[in-house]
Image 1 (tube, rainbow, N blue to C red):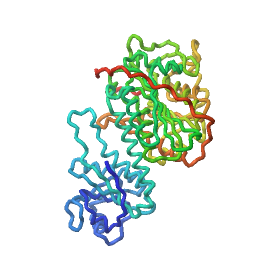
Image 2: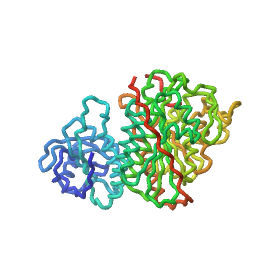
Image 3: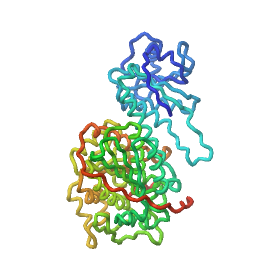
Image 4: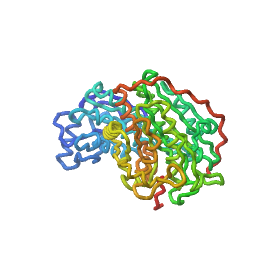
Length: 515
């Protein structure tokens, strides 16, 4: 979808041709004498409309207006959050129509409209997105263009451009999150990364089984060994600053399908385990936004990707594996596989001498119980990093919540047969999972985002949300304004892998979110 920003006064927006004009009406009644303000005032006086968030009043072929459809929508206090609700409601009401070009006017909002402008763009993109890839007769969205009308386009240009970049990143994350597992294998995910490498500032390396074995990633390899699909370790790089500037490293969990392995999940809702690579998808989406926005910083993206399957070669409960760090891990539950692939990626991240590392993973069902679908779980060993991520989430309307990392939680991970077990008991499962990862992230400021509750929706609205691309981009743009330490030398590149095997064909109310 195309987005456009234009300066239009209240009077001029009435003369702008479009298929639908959406006017956001705040709680304060407009006082100007233009036609639309008069219509709003009359509707309010008659009690036919109230400016509560999401409340709608539609008119067709109104004399004096160039648009075919006028949609008045309540915007409450005019905050970004309530503007998002308003635009979502308005475009939802237009979804079944033949509308192709919409103007969304913020001209009736008071004060600074930077936040509302960003919220309007993101809400419009979200409302229009429709998954099509595996449908036999795709039906593209009819709405093709949204023009954002504001009192002063120059004043909101930076916010508008940022939100358009984020919207494109979110759309990419949604797309790959939504694709079925046979259309989003580790090899295909690597192909998506290679497509990003065609964009300005981005490069990619893809490592296969031989390269990963040479690196000593025994934990990652153990998860992958039960699948016919070959693993891929994807290394993305965005160069926006000097070569020697320390990068931020993003690590995305890329389990393209999670059966649970030998510790197999129940059948109900297991289909949703195609979403277990949404951490990886969010890294891809973030790099798409970086290519659009070109901030002055360096970013590395690491995606360990494989399937977790239960064949005769699969990892078994009681197996002990050796991670890239040299630490041995007793596998008590093969459905706690995400942490087994992430730990090796966290060790690999050390070579970049990063200023910070953030891993993103649909890691635990326990986080869904703790925080639901509203906030992602945030765990961090670094106060400054935790505060920056939390603030970024609030600013991006993609919130997270700081969770504890007390050392006492690590007690349950003790093992008689290895350095550490991969699970503790049921209590505080999201915390003990984070404590496991923390063992492998001691060489740099580190944070973990558990997005098991926020990465996708179930039920009638089933689909990937694209979170936390908004949070990550907001955080990275903030880091671009902060001087980074220098590193002495760039890490040595690995060799590219050989061609992968051919992907196999594709073969409610218990939650099967990741363990």
